[in-house]
Length: 279
Ligand code: GLU
Image: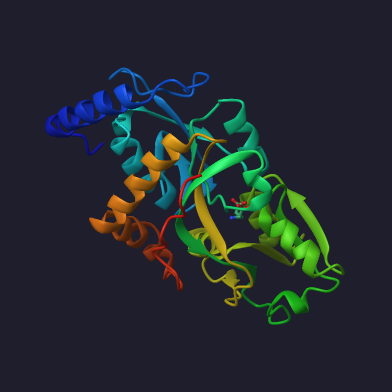
């Protein structure tokens, strides 16, 4: 996409350096840095507009742009990236079974997930919110969900949190958020809960214009991290350095504006975040 000959030469130089610096714990076939023609498998969402969206052979979104930048810093040009769909409930498994090397998929850093995978980042801070039909004024926050039919996704922090906090809610868990949106529009459910970033992306879709609204009062902090093999501190550090560089050179802001700006989304407090130390 944005690759140039100069970029390729620079990438090859980075690749040579990273290849000599590591390469011992590169398990599986999810990509390695020891050859210019190799690819890297990266997990993203395929159905979240503004974040990770697949349309034909086109992949767009903030997660896609940040992943593309980080991959380049690791020595992989954009055309060496193999995008793999990473639904919420499958992310830990995709990493631990080496089906992907990295995951950029609105993936919140949590202590529970850290038992199975490691994270670089955070690279973005979002918050959990609610999406409802535009003409519904009865749902204004989690405390108004009693008896309502709420949709979220299996394996997400969103489903877990709402279950913990609103025991009276009738929660239906689907495999992807786009299935929840369809159910919301059809009237089969009353609300969808997940990160405000994701909800803003759906509400801004032309086909839902005037039909959906984000409630607009967040009730969690979702720290998006880059999922990687548990204990791969070296890779974590490389990804962290790439994220830091991306924030410093303005490319992070551009990725945010280009992808979330369209939905009228402005990042909340704490953005851009300072990445945690890799351990
Ligand atoms: N960020 C939350 C999570 O990691 C919700 C979004 C998602 O399911 O991707 O679970």
